[in-house]
Length: 257
Image (cartoon, rainbow, N blue to C red; front, side, top):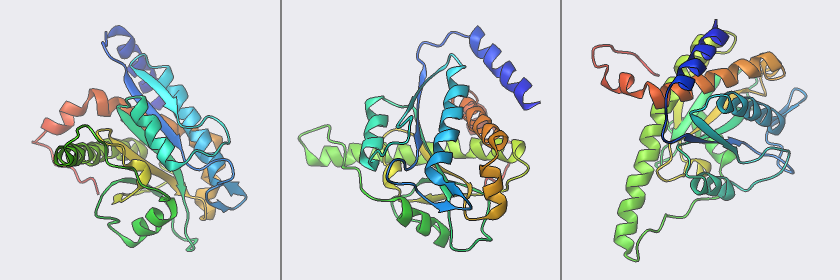
């Protein structure tokens, strides 16, 4: 059923005329000498790349999108350079792919993180924030006047946070609908360096807990990874082409959290 829906989406896309392709930058977390979390016979860097390549494949089959990856092989890319790639490619959306990890093997499920400059909103978010952050992105300079720079930077980061959350809402819908074998736990926010992409909607997706045996079994399942990538693709389509329906549908209430 999901595959049929995807074919309908692609057919509709092919019929339309789009002046500007939406640029999507996918960021497979870690890589090279940085394996990320390691547990249950799995390495986070490998899973991240698999999902990213699958998502890239879905997006590239849709004529409305242009896709870039921050890495396409097992290499290390510094966090600062990952954000620069998104800025240089003039990305319309930045999606960083990760797997979660915890000393508590009972923790499980999918989380999506958006930027919050005040820091983590929960204990778990703070743990993830500390694990992922290695550097910070400098304030974008557009003027010789430092006051103007601060105003522009504040506006750009505010847009990043707001629109990142809006994309996360669509991702929650599709992951919850299409992946019954994993529980979507929460949309969280934290002060991630990799999400500091001024004026670019950005999210960090923690697919599942590599430290949880049941989640790890899913992360080792190629079919699960394929369906997860499908869900992110459909969320991307909805974010860009059904966004108005979400924003202006005031008669229908829905809980995102």
